[in-house]
Length: 460
Image 1 (cartoon, rainbow, N blue to C red):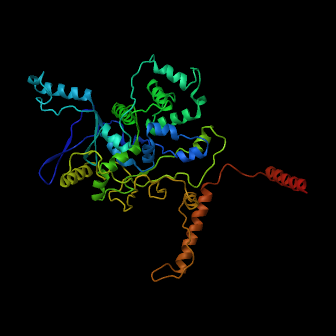
Image 2 (cartoon, rainbow, N blue to C red):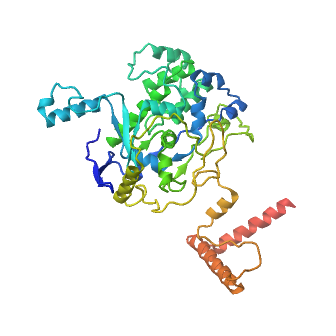
Image 3 (tube, one colour):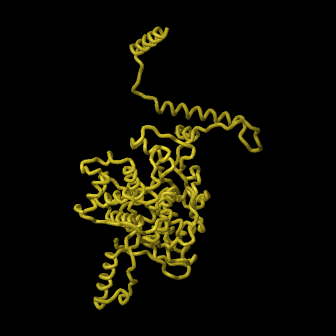
């Protein structure tokens, strides 16, 4: 756990409000938010891979439905740079610090030391100055998955279940490559690396612990997904604090927690929440096309019913566990104002405008697949219009259809001037990209002329 002191902000109420400091030594702009991939199970089925029985056994359909939603990149980064893990190890360190300040506390209980009792592992951080706490219960609720089932970690290489992995996944042959295992098993492995535990580089081979997760998945043995994700997040936070990992996993899940925990609602009330200011993104969908890319099938069969990327916010739950204790609106406003003053902007990012735009955040109901691919800030396939704009690097103005000119509009002279300016820019662009190294010599001209004549003669 990083040791850094909180910064104090004097609010209008006269109380000293603590703004949580950064815990990560890695620069903000260096972090990469990893967004989980939604899965189009219907598309997989239409292309020859039915996963229904396996997914029903693990009760994960609601989780994958949740993944098809917006990820608020800037909020995730702001959360991550201040995150720390409060676990049993951190609680023990807290007790040692109390004893170092007052030796008379040695041997006393946490209550006698003036410390809160340790109940569970937590990830503690702050977004826009608002302190947040994420627990396994919070993750389970956001995942829509019960925190029950198998969970094994730090197993030895001689664990008996690894023999089961070899028998079921590798068909009894330890030399079998993962690319050669059963298609359904390969797809579950893809779920693990792109939907559960996003990797941060290194070997593509699963660890011993992840081999057991894969075995549980293919053997219809339900895993405790919230516990595994909580463990993965805690590990990633600690690695980030050590400066060893710049990837932020579970960007979509963290964004859903911010939504259900009413952080977005709080920011919206303070005019700080929109798709542009939050840098909204969506994950790449796993579907029948993925089967073709993995060479499990030869040809992908698209369908008009295929799942589309959605940037529409899910409907709020009524029983979602609280993620921040402070509920006083005045105090929250003071915390946000203090954070803005400290960072010099809305969120610590150079390209964040001081005044948010007015693009609203869209909301969808539970159990729907609303098509939000046209929402602002979403990375989607470019339309023909977008492609033409991107191929126009000098922003040459396009002309609108002719219409009657109203009062105060451009005159014919102004239109001519614009057209001349456009021609100049186009010429400058062509000259800019003309290769200065290529000059047609007389020999090359003669060769090209003879080649053309020969091609014409051959056609006759």
